[in-house]
Length: 196
Figure (cartoon, helix red, strand yellow):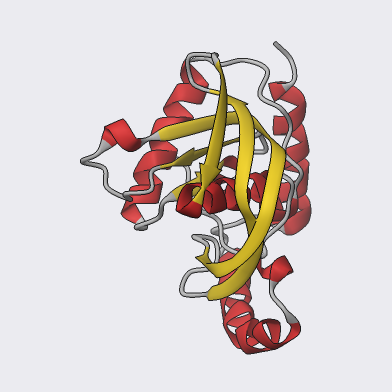
């Protein structure tokens, strides 16, 4: 059973490995990720946010399970072009209750695969472009807090510490194993996923 992991769970800093096979297991993981995302009122969720070290994420900008036609899956995404930039507020399901202004490209071109294994190329701006950049960063082990300016970082510090304390408490209660054990599990999952 998957769960959204909070900061500083090691999966959030783990550089994800490419997906090499689209199978029923991947499709089931995608479905479960959409369900978790909707339950948390999110619009996007990267695989490593649920402890899966593979390069894919899900999006539905409506955050509404009743609109499945708006669901998008990005497998092995690559942002191939970025145009100009703008600053806007972001949040993250791994940082509940924390928001901050992040500068990102105003418009992007992304290449990825869908669940059918077809290559998709997409020009995206506004919220879609921002969400794709945010989730692609997750797959590279980058977090939105990494982009906060010094003043925003200072004001976010107390909330980040609170989220981290909650994670450490959950570890002490046995909900999560030690960071070393989690890293070992991630390495093992990444290795086994690379075998087709």
